[in-house]
Image (cartoon, rainbow, N blue to C red; front, side):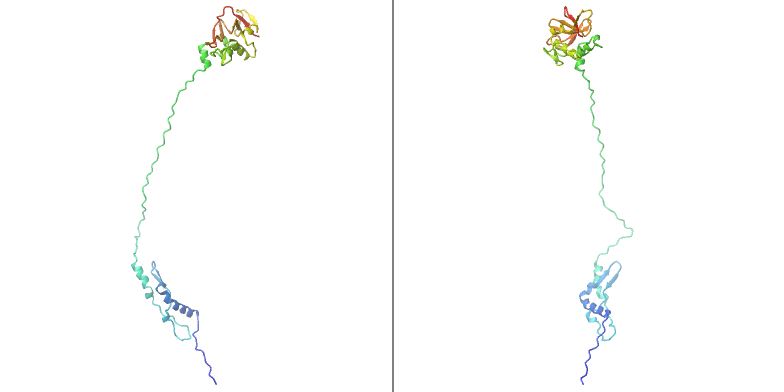
Length: 251
């Protein structure tokens, strides 16, 4: 009869025994780096474990006991590092200061408003007023439509054949004035001789036409007339110079 062979009894495996085995295998690699030093609180946390040489070898069927770990040896390098580091301490009443460059603030002075030169503008008299000043207008002009229009052109130069305010000859001036009143007259002095009704000098009124051979004017009352005399002169009020003028009333 052959005797049966039996396997050697194995230690039962538990989570605790597995943790111990893993720790034993890794301890050689971890070494001193397994120590974590909390400098502020003085607390040292190390991984508990046993070197392979210290692992449990008991054949006891119960849970294996963990070997003791020399924490002093494991944390020696960490303590040595802490002792060589400089210690910085500050008093409880320390005050913080910040060095800042001094700022110089300059406020610009407001600019003075620009000086505006005030000029007194003297309005020069109009051309028409200068003409009137040089040629006083008789009182008979006021209220007389013909003379009021004629007086506007005092000072306009004599221009042979002229019939506009830029220059007039004697008949061109008379026909232009009456045209402003809607009355059409012949362009020449000879044609004006028969354009109206002849009146005596005593019956003549301001605004009537004064005719003489080769020249016409407008009666201004009294011994005055307004006309365009001759080249080199201007329209003006002046005395009646004709020896036997004919007074003609238009309309």
